[in-house]
Image 1 (spheres, rainbow, N blue to C red):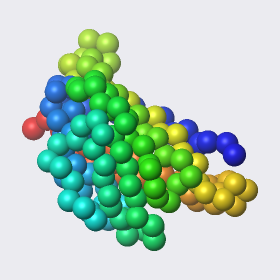
Image 2 (tube, rainbow, N blue to C red):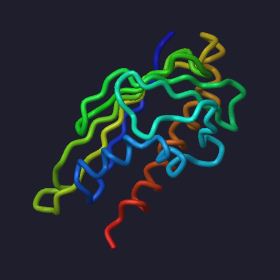
Image 3 (cartoon, helix red, strand yellow):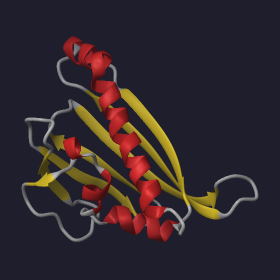
Image 4 (cartoon, rainbow, N blue to C red):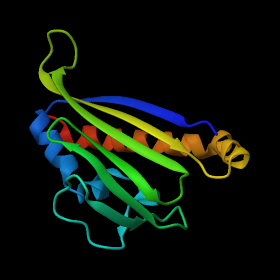
Length: 156
């Protein structure tokens, strides 16, 4: 059973501290997820994420409840969330925040680097589901998130 890996990189014209604080607030998920993937909390989340925090939620597109734990937390540099229970056979999302210019000589900002390692359940059926649209659905989730982040953090 091979894992799938999605790597993304997005630059925002804001400081690492500001971008990280946005991600540290669980309510921010509601602002950057499409309607079909927007979490509906089973248990209200804390006001701020930290190592060991567990999030319990459902999303409209999937019949299963999710339980995710923040396994690693190194503010304001990185954190890792991992599915404990949910629709994937494996889900690990590494977030990294790196200050730097968008391009050489450009203004300073923050690079958000994501690495998602995931596997759909069902071995051969999971691979088929990934090929028939499951992988595109995961990419679409991050495409939407990136568009929303650009809108929310755009310079006025």
